[in-house]
Length: 331
Image (cartoon, rainbow, N blue to C red; front, side, top):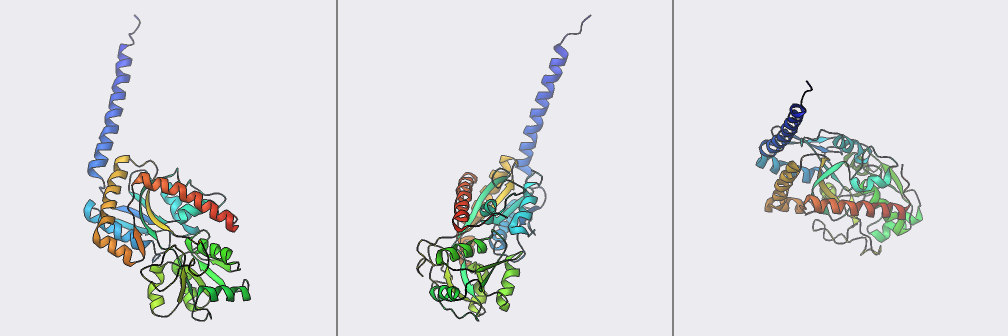
């Protein structure tokens, strides 16, 4: 007798329901129990880099409210691309977060082939903050006390002034390249593997110039170990209200600022993304966190994943336009 097809069909239906139940169970468990162990926050730059200030400020509050440690793991190299690739290829379980800066937007214009897609391979969580831009700081041996004097000096000795950066495509590199282009001068770019390593050579006088964050340079400026001449954003930073913008110093329209943000690898369950965003946004809104960020020259944001995704698309296009205008050739 020919076997009826009812039994196989019933088994198939049973498997479908079982699979659906498993997915529902996983989603529910992820929402209720996450995080069940410490979360790794990859910072793709050297220890002591400016990005650690917002990363630690938000990470500590996430640990307080979510009951697990959020541990910083520095993975520097290639303007952030080494650590970023680790995140792109990490398990989609919510236990790896990237905290980085605007190099994430500029790297697609700096490298011919990245080992990841800056948009498709990541799930934006939130933009933590914006910046006021980088300061032009010089070693005290440089005989310039204003942006105009620095430009005149550079014109008198084309290519002989060196500026350090945290790597090709890093914010100090982009700021310096835009500055040189708009000022009509030639500076020699010397890329390093991180901000702290680069800045050490500026402090020693081996490198004369760096376009570095107010946060990182503040104590050295106050101690007189470097001199701040100008800043690259559209407004002065409250940290150094006496330091003019490049725009005020004659480079009309100069506006190169950065941001710091948080991402999961793409594919992390939406419930986890929403939960981490909610807790991060609450942290960024806390008066003490806002004050800490602002005291370090950062402008708190705390955008939604959707707002951050839209911002990133626009910023990647903006960075591509900047790279094209200043003639940066992808490496």
